[in-house]
Image (cartoon, rainbow, N blue to C red; front, side, top):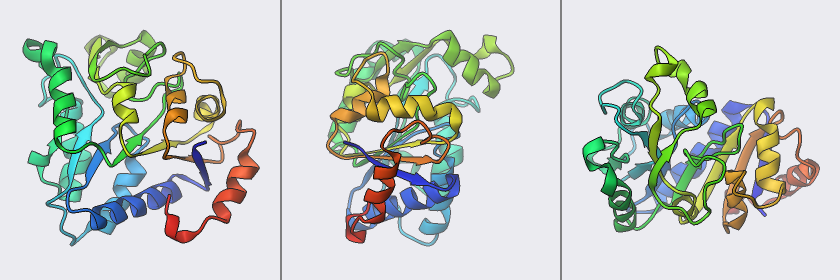
Length: 259
C-alpha cells in the first residue's frame, strides 16, 4: 500500500517533500532526482530554493519525465526550457547533469533507448516526482499504457492537448507527439512521490491508490512499487475511503522514517 499523506495545502506539501529531497541530497554523494514539470510540483521547487540556498548541489543529477517531439528545445514551452527555467537555474543545479528526453525528429527512433541507457548509466533514479492527470496519466503515459513500458514516443490524446493548450498561443501549436518515460521506467525509481491538489484530481487519486490495477488508469501502477508516497491536500483526498486511516498512520509515524 502506498503511504498517503494528507496535508492542509500546497505549501505544506512542498515543504514536506522538499525536506525529504534535501535529506537525499545530503546523504548521497551522487543523488539522482526524477523531475516532473507542470504546476503540481511547483510548491516543491519553490520550497527547495530556500532549503538549498548556499548548499553545494554540484553533485545532483536529474532526469525529466518527458518532452514534446519536434518542438525546438529553445521554445519556452519545451520541457528542456521549463526544467531550466523552473528547476535548474533557481536551484543552482549543474545544467550538464540534468537530462531531458531528446525530442528531435531526426533522432527520435533511438531517443527512447538512449534515454533508458542514460538513466541506467546514472545508477537509476533515487526519488521520482510525479503529478497525476485527471485521466490518471503520469508522465505522458495515457490510458492504455503498458505497466512494462519504457521510454518511448506516444501520441497525445486530444484531451491532453487541450489541457496543455493554455501554455501555447493556440491548440494548433500543441505538438501531437511526445517522448515519455514509460510506466516500467518510472517503477524502477527507488522512491516515488506523487502529488495532487484540488477536487478535480480526487477521482484519479482514489483510483490510483485504492482502485484496481488497470492500464486504463496508468497511475494505478504505483500500487506495484515498494516505496510510494502520495501527498495530497484535503480536496484531492476527498474520495479516499481510508482517509482517516492515512491520517492516523502518518500522525503516529516515527520521525526518523521520513516519507
